[in-house]
Each structure stands twice: as C-alpha cells, then as structure tokens.
Length: 308
Image 1 (cartoon, rainbow, N blue to C red):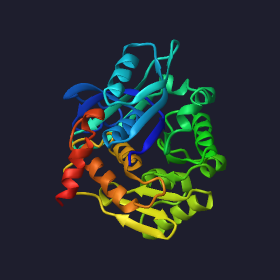
Image 2 (cartoon, rainbow, N blue to C red):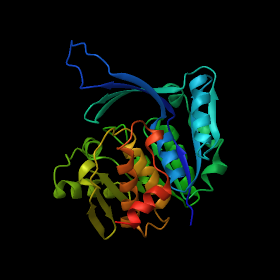
Image 3 (spheres, helix red, strand yellow):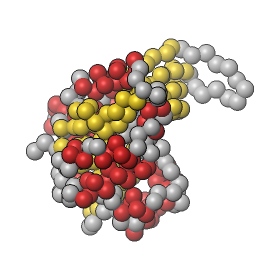
C-alpha cells in the first residue's frame, strides 16, 4: 500500500558555510567553502516521503524570485504535487544559513520569508488536498495558525496528523495537541516543550506521559545516535540507531519523519518496522552533504535492511 501524504511546511534555499568549528564571540575565522542546496524542514520531509514511495502534496509558500522557481523545480523533480504552493509577490523565498562544522554538526539561522506569509485561508483553499491523504505533516517553520487549520481539516475527515515541533516552542497550545496523533520531537525539543529534561528512560516516560495527557496518541522522541524512544498504547521501546560516520546532520531528522510517514500503516500497526526504515533512511542522510542530495531512494534503504 502506498501512503498519501500532505506536507504543510517550509521551503528554503540552504546556504551552507563549511567551517572547521564555530567561531568564539569576537573571533573571525576562515570558511573552507560555500555551497547552496534545496532545503527547508517541510520540503525535506516531503522529498523524504516521496523517495520512500509515498504520494506527496505540498502546501506552502515561496517568493516570486529565482529561489522560489528553483525550489518548485526541485520538488517537482521528485514527483511532489506543488499546486498547493502559493507564490507571494511581496516576499522572498525562505533561506537557511547553515554553519557546517568539520565534525558534521551544524548550526542553522533561518530567514522565514514567504513561509511566514502563509495564512490559514491558504489552507482553506486546499481543503480537497487535506481530505484525500493518510497523513498531514507539519513543523514550526510556518505559523501555528496554519498548522492548526490544516490539522483541524485533516481530523475532520478522520485522517491522521504528524507534528514535528521544530524549531521547539516552549508552549504548545492544548488545541493543537488535541488534533495531533503523532508527535516527533528530538530530545532537546521535547525537554523544552514539557519542561522535563530527557536524560534517561524515566524522563522519556515522563515526557511521553505529558504528551498523552494532552491528547497525543503516539510519541516518538528521537535520540540522535542512541536511536528513538516510542510510546503508543501498550507499546514502549527504544529502537536503536544504525551506526554510521556522520558527515553532515542536515535534514537527518526531516528524513526520519518523511520516511516514517511513508512507511507507517495508517492504523499504526507496524511502528517498529517503520521506525527501523526511518532510522536507516536517516543514517544514509548523515553520510552525505546537503539536504535534498542526501535523502535516499526507497530501494537503497530496503536493500540494506533486507541484507542485515
């Protein structure tokens, strides 16, 4: 079965500054090289889902500029339906400035641009898209009012929602959590949201309980190299990560979420299998520079998992 997915989210062009390490305050350092690539959390997740075999439609915004045209072309190349992307004449396409260290770790500065011009009424214009999907995915690189409208519409027709609460917000509305079926923060984001630092199994359980108490059915807390913690009904487990040498962690979390949505049955019956698939997809992503260029195709992931 092929999942159908709507992604409501950000579209950015990534400007990547390759450096040995982050500069100290007041320090000037040299940059090894500079590169640009397609990105944005929403676009990354859409590409990951599409390359994992899902049918994907996108709702978002770009500027009337070369970056916007570039991003629409890049997404269309992966078969993503971009009819739901609005072009705004008075805004720039979003940009992200990525400080990529030699260790593979990155720090990111985002210029939201057209992503934050998006409004709830643009969601209402795309109701047909949201009534014909298994999952709607969103992240916090677009206004929360837009996410709320999209999730309300998705839930109204009995379909599922996946929230990636990144960048983290210290306060999530009860109204949004009430229409979130699956939440996927990383350990830092989850600690900021719940006020409970993720340090051990007990704190993971406490974080999951907080989300469940606020109406979220399923919780996955990604733990980087340690894997993922899952809590859903009677299911509780830590799924280990695959051990690889990281070159660039950009889009690793986005790949995980997009691949997961493509693989996870709409009744959530194959959680462990879907997370293993998502983890392997993410493991491929960290081994290659850039966002879009690093996201693997489905057969590549399946071949490796089959031979393990």
